[in-house]
Amino acid sequence: MENFRKVRTSEEESPLPFPDLPPGIVEMKVKEGSKIRNLMSFAMAQMELKGSRQIVFSGCGRAITKTITCVEIMKRKLGGLHQVTKVRYKTLLEVWENQDPPPGSAAQNLTVHKNVPSICILLSRDPLDPNQTGYQPPEPSQPGEDPSSSSAKGQKRPLPPPCEELLPKKLQGASPGSSPWGSGDGESQPEGHH
Image 1 (cartoon, rainbow, N blue to C red):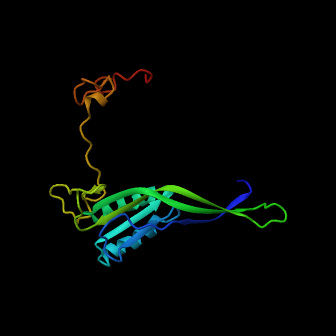
Image 2 (tube, helix red, strand yellow):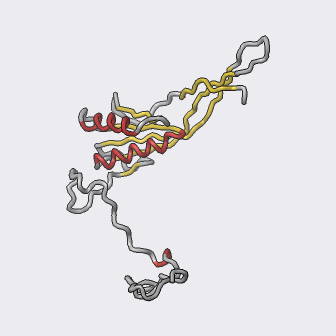
Image 3 (tube, rainbow, N blue to C red):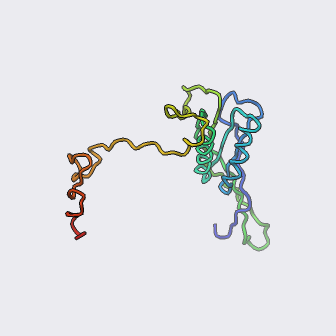
């Protein structure tokens, strides 16, 4: 393959894996080199300014992580979105050109069919069928929290209380607030820190 150079990559078109999508639904095709800022400004404008009820994000190969990131940003910014995720394989066609053809013959191209993982995520303001595979309900808002207030967005959820079996042996059975190294007044320190 050292004499070949990739000249073109194309995706085999395949329909979106969601039944009953409205005509003209916006599909955000995320590529490896896409800028999240650009994707999100367009997608947010579609959902907020144009009043779209649903949007699809799709990406394959090394763009999958970026696709999921975009979805999570949108869910956090808008709130109350239902989600359905479908994972499948897509076929990419890569055309490679021979850089060093044998003398007296024309340059030869090689076409490679490559199966790569692909993800499609449907976000909807309207409820979706919770029984379909890949469904995730909207994140519940905290009690007393106004879902439209921006102050609650971006806050971390409190950590659950520690599980005894996950604690190091020194800490198991220790009373809450006590330190395994003494009273915490500086008198006694762990070994190696004298």
